[in-house]
Length: 195
Image 1: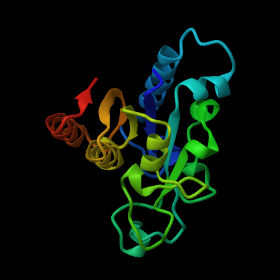
Image 2 (image 1 turned 30 degrees about the horizontal axis):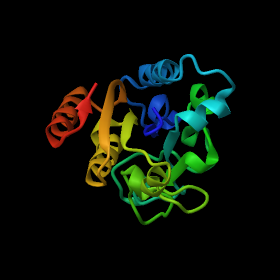
Image 3 (image 1 turned 60 degrees about the horizontal axis):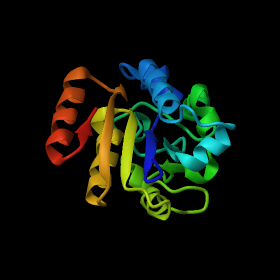
Image 4 (image 1 turned 30 degrees about the vertical axis):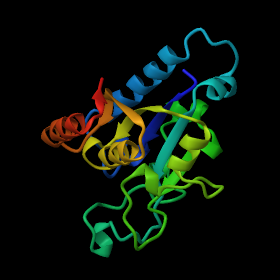
């Protein structure tokens, strides 16, 4: 298990029950916790020791209030995941698994839209790809919100970087079901294992 990791994309309140609430998102959180429990079953110790043996990395939208993607600024989306708001926070069920070094923030500059987790950096300025390589990860399990956008972009970049990618299909939220299924099909054809 040491060469495997979990990447959780945008399991933030605005995508779960807020301004951009997505379908299946509450269930996706529960499925993610169930997956973590299954993968770490039998491991003794507290949550921080579990993270030592199975890295769990978080990707988080982290927008300024005047981000270019917002409708109010001429963009496509309602205001969401603004830095310092409840909507921009990771769901509380996932808090025990968070580690600041393994949390990557994207969309932080007001004039740049970023969908892929590879665009995010942690507080030390390291990218998701850099940290996965430092951890000597070969296989990445991915879950999150939304399938059609940030999850798809992150999976695509993981493949390009040479990682084996497994997508946890029950642990995904999505904008609409047709788009979700089309994204799964596209990712499957590109080489992602859809579980």
